[in-house]
Length: 183
Image (tube, rainbow, N blue to C red; front, top):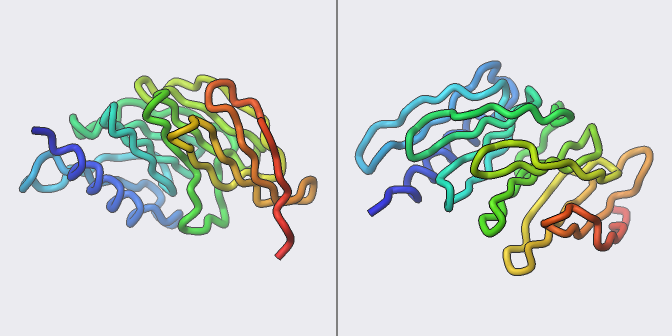
């Protein structure tokens, strides 16, 4: 029997608790097994968001240092650190979902607000599979598990209004976009 849900919960709770940008070099806690104490894992500077792939037993920690730390939760180890340019968040609002995992396709989606892009990572290896342009400061992302589509919310900036976009999960192509009302 696997302890994945317990380990995943420990990673999520600890990473979010330590995720305030004030932490210069933060750690996350992974719980190795039921009843075991936490393991401290060094991740990048200022972890701000976590997404978990329960199929690969990996956690992805978005750091304000423009990196994603790939954590093998089963082994309690950071297995890779991936550069993801444009993810520095200086005014991060807790609760924004900056990453999402599609467990069906094995992809991780990271919004890059200051580069106006969506970065697509391979969940198994952590390798960058591609980038898609998303105007207006993308600030939230989610996966529709039934359709495999990606929902990206752009909060708006001086060049574009706040918009919700539906993207094809395979190609990253924008299928439709709807401006959000002011206010």
